[in-house]
Length: 457
Ligand code: PHE
Image 1: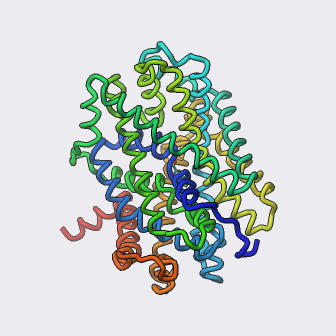
Image 2 (image 1 turned 90 degrees about the vertical axis):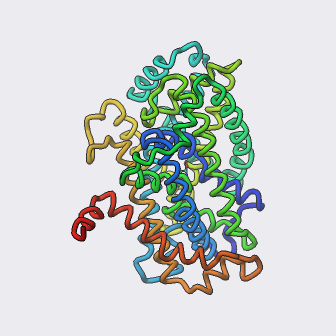
Image 3 (image 1 turned 45 degrees about the vertical axis):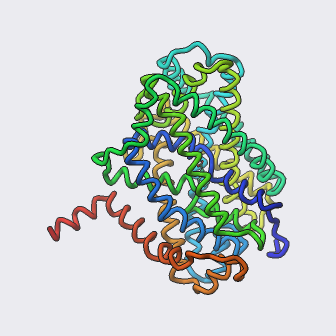
């Protein structure tokens, strides 16, 4: 495809909503509460904020720069911008990360379909908190049903991907994201008015600093990267569809703020209910799925609420699976000169294989572990905690040290037509702070930092 003819998103709102659709998903509503619960609550939230502001935002702006400047997929971008060098490894890291993320994300997306089905058939009402947990465990650990739902979800993603960028991605995001936002607010109100809700709010907002350790810091950084969809070229691919007039800094700010807001709302929706119903905040990946049905039971017409909620959660997941799929499909389509549908077929097939294994790792294959993690958790760990931060670090190093400041500034200010007041601060964070901080967090997790300290103390 020639550079000039490359499709672009239709409108300004379309740009923001499609990118928000990519960022907002299960990462905010499923993974954020579960990570916050496992990592001790408010202290995690605090570090998460720090990571969003000082690492997430600069990396996002930098990805937008690369994407719109090169107008290529994640790997092709580096072939255009740094021909003959090894920087395209950043893109390959991203393409693999897309597969691995989809390998567990599609399974969780499938769970939302099961809950839509259950809400529809009325089987979510009249149960106790313990029933919900038992039902979830037996469902997620079973052989057939979760795989069937995973398959259906991958199929839906596939169909949207082959129907093209503008029609598929943009339309789905435009309609559904605002409704999701509204319903989250309603559920927050219900949750904070439950008995003992204050315990949940304390857990979420009153930090206990003794809970902070290297793994909490790594988890918070991983969550920031995962939730903002950064470090793996997804936003490079999306911003390659941005028009010339798109204000990159504003778009990054809007996406970051909205994404963080949705995560906080999800926290406010979940934790008061967790404490109110006596659920363990450390329950892990099942947390949202065992907590929310209890909240719906407290609402008049609970089944209808749960039906609407899980449909929207499914759609939020879909706008993210589309974006992940697009990274791999655009790469194969543009770099291997395959047709789009053929590329998409390869990608969907790969995801299905990973999805089946990770679904079974919740049940039948749970004894097979890699570094002590089942396959599902392993895919989550290597992507969120390793591949995305590593990708983000390399992106910053590449742009910080290899790209001419003037070129960077010209692109980020649309050739000087929009101001970028904090350009120097941004450039400093992108070039030095982000790569060093990410590197230190890695070393800290590996325990190398404390060994190093001991040499001097
Ligand atoms: N950010 C998405 C979410 O929160 C997940 C995602 C990660 C999507 C990386 C694209 C790339 O659900």
